[in-house]
Image (cartoon, rainbow, N blue to C red; front, side, top):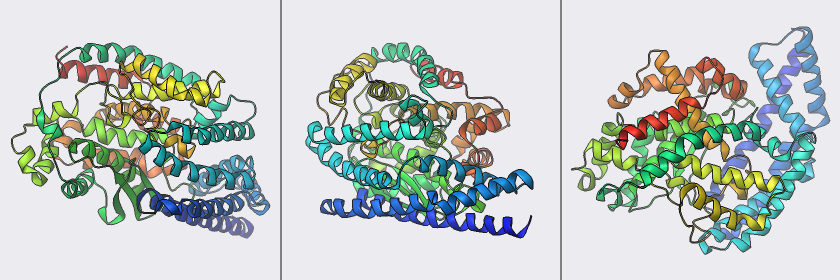
Length: 504
């Protein structure tokens, strides 16, 4: 390697660190806005976030940054680069090409718009006031159409957005995936819905907020998070984020008469957080230092929440945590009772409270609406009606208001159109991981029953977590599972689990 190439590599490292530092500040502002910031501070926060977004965009897209990438790409072609630097260059160059498609002033305006929209959404959800939020969704969809055209004018706008969240996925791929899931799941949901629900009064027993926060920390530790690098907070809509090396944040929403809601929310968000904690430390402060896609990220959260957290094998360790904190509620509950309570398949209104079987149908509602919007088959003003119609069609439930309907999720306020399908895709990835673990000699049920998830974490770290963004999702799935993604594993898992559980 000549001295010029060495200097250019050092410059690339420094540039990545500058960008990641500003991203850290953005994350702190976002977390503050969701947790403790006063409502009247939204405008100031939006201004600050817009300024940071502009600075990040300028660092990534400046003429000097473009020249640096070009020089390193020439070096890679002539003399080669070490594997990590080559991966950093590939991902950074892709980020740069996509960012340069969006003018800096538009990036600043986008950050301000989504920050303002999020504050409006909070109020609109509380007040059941879709009308106040609708103009922001209009502006967001209009902006996303323009951004998609700037990124790739040759492709359908929604396909461009889907690809941003999961490389290689488009409407054709998701249509095929959801058709397979629908064929397997919908008849089972209808059959189970006709059965009487078991009487499990402990599900609605009162568990005080401080108790739930304490058991939340124990659940995160049981998953395997490094608690010295994890903060826990309460929010309206739970999320998690990997801020930087040594700093991940997990949030939850506590209902004192539904402790299991918090349990599975924590296991879900903890899955995201443990992924971020276990990216290869060598990638720190580079563009590789985070999860590679939303589908892979959701595969971690849905694996820990459902395949592990709601399994019969894990009922013992989970019940142990619950009894330790609320013996008056869970002292007489059996493992079978807890397993049944964790897996009640019952169509309901709220996606985040949905059981494992009906959950993908909630995702289909959102996917169908987003697809229709970007295909020009529906207007933003149609969303409340479309939501009601699709919920009735897929889940057989009536939506009484928009708070429990199209205002329930925060994602659209942040401009995350194209994100929702990755939740269902992540669930399906998880089922394929378990098959690969079994072929590698890992007994997932035994690890769950022992309350020692080290074997599962070891496989995930080796095959998924440590790679960060150095591999895209299709490559990760092929390398870890020995074959491309196949939804059959997921469909078979759901049918087997719920057929046995309900004695069908």
